[in-house]
Every structure is written in structure tokens, then in C-alpha cells.
Image (cartoon, rainbow, N blue to C red; front, side, top):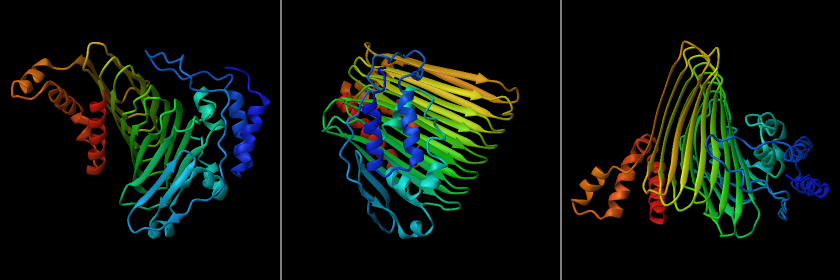
Length: 424
């Protein structure tokens, strides 16, 4: 990592001031920029990505015109659409506005809700954790803030469409901050896609704070382009009797590293983390999925399924960490990988770290090739090899797909899977 130059700091400060960011944020960004030259990269067991260009020294910040996006009131739809750093659309029902729900781009939140967002922003994921988190804060150029106050229930999922603009070579550094007030309940669907074909970088982050007795279900459908190198970091902080469930469809076509963490700090806190990944061609993907049980009687489950095509590589690291004092905790995980061709490389690594006696914990892991008996059975009934392969894959992924509660999300994920198999 090259030394940070004064012109880089000047560019950062100039961009931040153009956005009318609060002083506290600008100071933290400058510190983060300095940290990028000394911080280390995060570790992924059995996966080496150190040759990737994930923290370019200088970003040419876009000529962003300061504006506040217009919020359109609707009857049922709650949705936000972003193209790179520009917010194209916000739909928010009048009922939710009157209840104090906030849905806006991250820079408007910094300006209009500075005191509120300061209490949560980069508190779940610390900027100084590693080089990628420092880079993220220093070069932040897009994002969304969702705040749901106490006792508010949103019946329909909050839809978030995030489009990376690869028609120009500006990395997408996007931050989604979700705060669930006590006893609130809602679901979020995030869809990441790419427009354009320049070689580019995406550094995305999700922070969720779930206050006591709240419930958040987040589904992320990731399908960034083959020429996009992706790093993502998603983490939830879950208090007493709260629940955060993740459903992640990793359909990116380019090299990807990422981690989804849940910190179960409250007594009776819960999480279910489901991950589907499909890799193809010469793609390389390394994934850490971690649950830390800190609260008594906390429950954390991990279910991961991956399919490898072409000459690709996929590493699943499932990490269950039960901290001393988390009596009555339950940590279960299942990691399975299906290799569809001999040139692929896959690993499913279950890791259990247990520092408490009165707990339940278990794991299952498998890495294998397609069942030839299944293929023979299907092809003997007149089904061509390609279609038979798709059916076997759909069956393998079925354990995760059927566990997705939303029919619309399940249908959308299946459509994305079919597209990826067709292109794989």
C-alpha cells in the first residue's frame, strides 16, 4: 500500500463538503483514509485473494450535484432505487411517514438526521477492523438509510434496487444502514446489479441494528457483472429476543470475497443465515459466514449451498463462535458444495469455537460431484444432459429455496439462478 498523499485527503474532504457531510463524519473519513496504508486485509481460511486490486490508492470522485431526493407517497409500495451515487426513486407510504419511518439515501441522512445516524453508522462494523473497512468509510460514495421506529410493523418488504454504473470507472462504495426500533417488524429485499462493462470495483456494506423484540428479514440478490471485483461485509447486532434472518443469493459473475456476520448479544436473540452461491468459468469466490453467540439462550443457524461450474473456485467458511457465558446457546451449521465439472475447486469448512459447557452445537459439511445415478435416471427418460444438470442443481439448492418465506423473493432468486446456469 502506497503512502496516502495530501491530494487524496484534499479530494476526500472536497467531496465530503460538497455533500455537506457533518464534521464528525469528515474527521472519521480522514482517519480511515490514513488507516488504509497500515491496516491488514481480512482473513479467509483456505482462500488467497491478495493479488486482487481491492483498494486503489486514489478515487476520482464523481462531480456529484447536491440534492435531496423526492419522496413519492404510495399506498403500498416501499421502495428505493439507486444508480451509483444517484437516487432515482423513493416510494414511501404516507402511513409509514406519519409513523416516523425514514427511507433515504445515506448522504441525505447525514445532513438531515445527523444525530440519529451518528449513533449507529459504522458502530456494528468498525472502520479500523481491516483495510477494506477503512477503505469503505474513506471512499463512501453511495448508500441507503432505513429507520423503523418502535412498534412499527411494515407488512410488505422494503425493496432496494442498487445498480452499479460500470459505464464509467468509478468504484461503487455503498453502505446500507438499517435500524429496527424495539418491537418493530419488517423485511428488506436488496438487489445488486450492474449497468455497463468497464472493469470496476464494488465495496458494499450492510449494518443492521435490531433492538429488543424486533424482527428483520433481509434478502440480498447479488448479480454484479463479470468485470466487477466484489468485496462485501454484512453484519447484524441483535439484542434481547430480537431476530435477524439473512437470505443471500450470491450470483455475481466476477471474483468475490465477502462475509456475513451476526452478533447475538441479547438473551434469546436469534438468526437464520441461508446462502446460495453459483460460480462459473474461471471465477473465484471466498465466503465467511459467522454467527457469534454472546447472549444466553441465543440461537444461530447457518445453511449454505454452493454449485461450481466451469473452472471456478468456491470456499465456504462457516464459523460458529459461542462465547463464555452464553449458556443455553444453540449453534448449528450445514455447508455443502456440488462440483459440476472436474476443473472446479470447492471447500466447505465448518469451524466451531465453543467456550461454554451448557450449549448445543453441531455441523455438517460435504463437497462432491454430481450424482451420476440421478443424471442417468433423468437422461434415461429422454431429458437432455443440460436440462438434467439444471434439475439436479435445482434439487440440490432446494433445501435453501424452500426455506425462503416470501414467494416473490423465491421466484426472483430462481429466475436469477436459471440465468446464471444458462450463462455458466
